[in-house]
Length: 354
Ligand SMILES: NCc1[nH]cc(CCC(=O)O)c1CC(=O)O
Ligand SMILES: [Mg+2]
Image 1: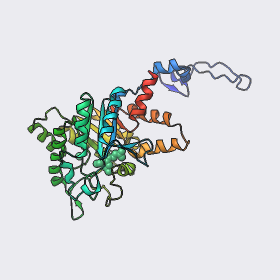
Image 2 (image 1 turned 45 degrees about the horizontal axis):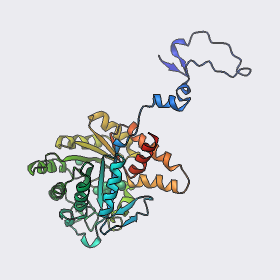
Image 3 (image 1 turned 135 degrees about the vertical axis):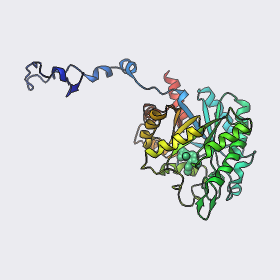
Image 4 (image 1 turned 90 degrees about the vertical axis):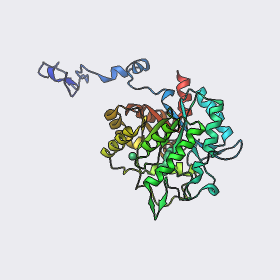
């Protein structure tokens, strides 16, 4: 039935009840959308999208030391954790039914160099954390980011020569980084570097080295974004980063280009694809999901978290409601899962309400 101005078009010539708008303000509406919103049970009944704990991946920052949790100033409520504390949070994740956690290291400045060599140290913080989590909680998924920026003195994701980020040389190092993480017991390799051809190279190396079961979640459409600022504080690359990442991360004005990026990563062997950031790129999430019907993930990045958590801390918005609204927005856009720093708080809320 075609509807115009609240009246089915088919009925437009039917005699209308004569009303005197002033004497009786009732409108002659056959269809009233508000009927389905009249009470909580009715709203639940027609609800189209639901966020569950199964949708959440929890990013966690690892730092060297013992029994310490240090707050990240630009991300209220988020801390850097030593490995023993990560294991505690892994337990919390397991109890909250969060399927997967993602690890990001704060590397001591003394361990950073031009080549990001610490990325290949089988005893680096990420590898230590993976082994510790897997030992205690083998059933929780562990995702590791592949990129050199936490390990390079210049803060870029790849090797630099003459001010240029080298593609193929970087991919060769990323392959070794991925193998190092797989050897430590990582379940999902997540390349976030945006070099061309890295998914295919990593897939081949994983398969050749007996890691055929290790999944790849590709940061396939990753944009050069101002919303990564607080993350760079958290991993300590904000101050050292020279220039920007626009020669490898995508231009925020582009949309078709995201489909080409995703298509290539799928062809190269990605098991899951990701769009990043989240809230300013919901249109990309929808296009990717509709176009490829792949397991599609979205990263609600540090700056998005900071906007909501910061505004809530100032009493400008209701933080809990804004959190849940932003997360269900990703589901509505077609995401199968969300990397979000809100993961434990959202899971607690979901648990309390079920
Ligand atoms: N390659 C590193 C990486 N992996 C995830 C994020 C950002 C995550 C966030 O902002 O929460 C970044 C930052 C960047 O590309 O500079
Ligand atoms: Mg690509």
